[in-house]
Amino acid sequence: MPRQPRRRSYDQHCAAARALDLVGDRWTLLVVRELLAGPRRYTDLHADLPGVSTDMLAGRLKDMEAAELVTRRRLPPPASAFVYELTPRGRELQPVLRALAAWGAPELGEPRPTDAVRAHWYAIPLLGVLAGLGEGVVQVTLDEGEFHVRVGDDGSVAYGDGVYGAGTAREPDARLRTDTATCRALAGGELTLTEAIEAGRATFVRRASAVGVR
Image (tube, rainbow, N blue to C red; front, side, top):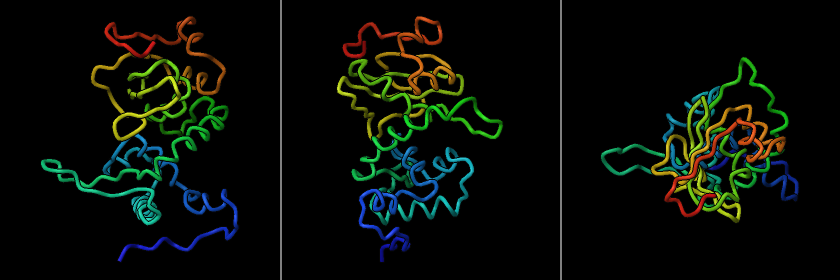
């Protein structure tokens, strides 16, 4: 029998309250953030969610499966590992995460001594900055690592099964190199990409044969 979601509700006939019934628990939206990069194994999710206990993560994933936000499937051989991925309903949370990241960007400041940092966590705050460069794949390199996104003139963002990917892309259309301080300024609207490049805080190189990204 499928696991039934735990009974927790604001019991309010309000769309916002209903949404929070599903995604308002601690860690849930951060699981969505990780799965926006595409299917992930449990061990990979746990590694990129520092601070979550194994029991908490397992419980959240089961609740998200019951709410039909994620699915679990086995990869074909030779991998034969189970991965979690967002359902279409779960992927609809992408603009919610983008709006939340934009709202929270002014609160970032310098990383605190206790803060974990992953390069791909800057992908969602930068989606709005990179959208409009022209359709194509942009590889972003920070001191902390690399990630890549596919952008379009209409602001849409998608890459394979996710909206971005951790690590390097195969034959990206453009490469952006910068640092986390500049990422914060870009995400918070304090700096445009053009201003960052002109100030020497970022470099942007387009592949000669690319037809999309400007």
